[in-house]
Image (cartoon, rainbow, N blue to C red):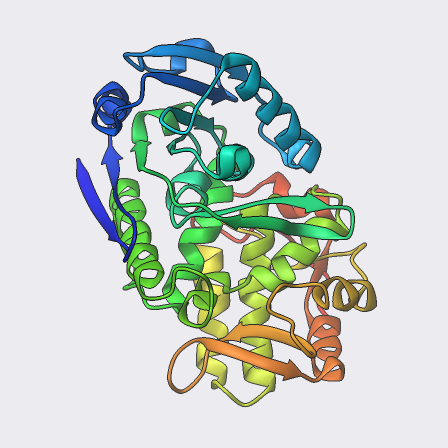
Length: 357
């Protein structure tokens, strides 16, 4: 078992990683002094460990369809009916959308109650459950309403991952792949548990320096600006990690077009993403003009288009990137049908036959 500390000025917690760590939930709740718990789970009841206290179990669904303010309101209503107080605890059990929604509900209810995350997908373990970001979507875009609410503990039980379908594993590998360009060592030769630990260690170190996204934490959004736009443009037919993988390839191409990196480094973006068996081409139905419009709604876009891009000093946020350059890079990317992008992916292989542009 690995234990990754995350130490902030006003709040600290540990991320436990390894097989069976979910069984420490009751001990964690006891340490918090909570007398009651609400567990919001997108997984079968038998996946939820004992809490050791009076517990209300609420069913949830992973997926963008329930990542809404209406879901948050419904959860808070259940908290009221159960009589949850600020001295109690909320527990999430599920993927990244569940940790986002439950985290936001915990942050808003009574202006904040403790939350513990039991992430059950690779994506949630390497990224969504750690760092305190909570959010839901609006029709205009992804994660536009949210706040920062740090968990009291994160229990990344790797036993959960043995049940995941191949595509859900790839969803998490998209976040692992982008770590290569924001300060991680080459993770390709490591075991999955080691990759998770390295990814969480990198994120914890960044969050400790910049909890609220004022500078350094922007690095964690590598590949995400286009990634979020692709999710929206495909009505979430592309999963988050798949979209981030394509966004990572695009980020390399855009950095090359701006003269920030050489052609070998541009190609390295493609090689890394391909290694994990992730898609590298744009969906045929995603028009550059529509993608650019969606990217203008990105939270990093202050006065124009902004991207986290590789460069001579490493990755950094680059603001006011000319729209015509973005359009040109998008137009020159290979294209493929969405169904082909996600249909035959296997780690270590290219995912598609693409139309070169």
